[in-house]
Amino acid sequence: MLIFTQNFKTQVMEDRYGVTLSDDGKVLLRAPEDINEYAVPQGVEVIEDSAFWRCSRLTAVSLPEGVAVIGRNAFNGCSALAEVVLPEGLEVIRESAFRYSHSLVRVTLPASVETIGKDAFSGCTSLQHIVVPQGAGERFRALLPGLEELVEERS
Image 1 (tube, rainbow, N blue to C red):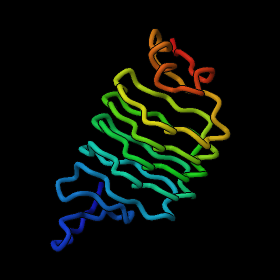
Image 2: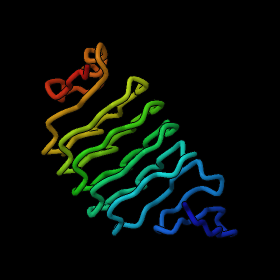
Image 3: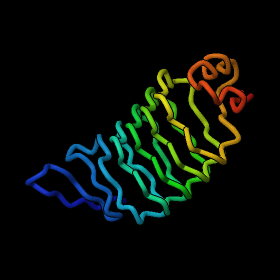
Image 4: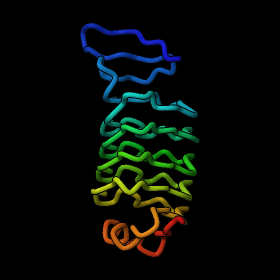
């Protein structure tokens, strides 16, 4: 259960983990740099640009269905994040979204992804697997220039 406080000056809410969300709960704006694990609340549709930027202690993040956009640099520098399963309904991964997430080994992408921005996974030196739905490998290889060899179709 989330407990929110509201800051009437800026029209944002902060949950008990110190994560800032828009007052309607649809946009995750910023997480504190010292966060370790986080389950994004139901109802969030957008992970804002730089929301988890430099959260170098973040080891796990859970994204609910309904998240449609991951912003620029959203998880840039999350050097402890090892695996991420992106939810069905996600449509856009913007530029440098996971850049320099050095420990990231596996990413699972849903069929709903239409756009992957430039350098979304650049600097992810441990990345070994980009798992995509069966039959979608060719489309995702085209969306991930330079990482084509890491794309694996799941059965």
